[in-house]
Length: 198
Image 1 (cartoon, rainbow, N blue to C red):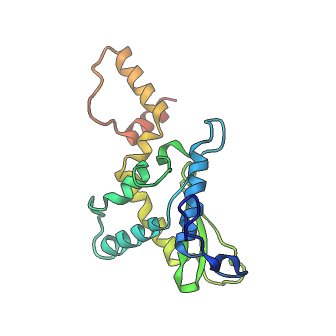
Image 2 (cartoon, one colour):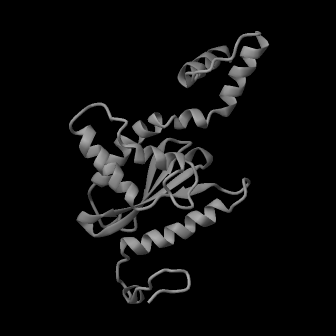
Image 3 (cartoon, rainbow, N blue to C red):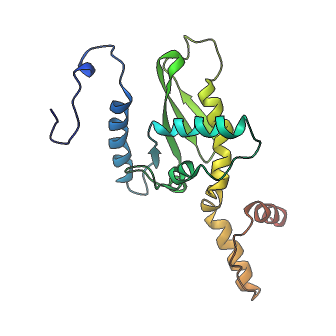
């Protein structure tokens, strides 16, 4: 039995205090992603990743951080999500301010929402049970905090958000009648240079 929209209704949802399953969370978040995509530029911009993002982070963490200091480029799925290619109705991260990642803390049978605040480079955790627990951040959040910066760097995320920096660099090249380089400019070097000048 399916509804008009192709979603299989679950009778378990109608019972109070029944936990939502991953498929239910994914459907709800899909519609929230779609709503976020339809907002205008003046409105607050965000995107929501699906529940599998946590699985990708865990796999990458287990595979590379515990065995090797360097993260391999083989985990393209994480980069594709950051670039906006693998999320139905999602936006690329360089177009938004925050990323909402639903996380199922299996050891506690509980859901939390990790909010990646991109401009501040921080992860905020919205947890309805935070007062009941005495422990620190969950191991899932710790893995996310350790591996996410690496994938943001590998996807050149920070260079995509520094358009003003590149405009200034290109204007400087052109005003000095120099050839604009074809390769990627070093954002860190440009930031240091302009900070020293200003």
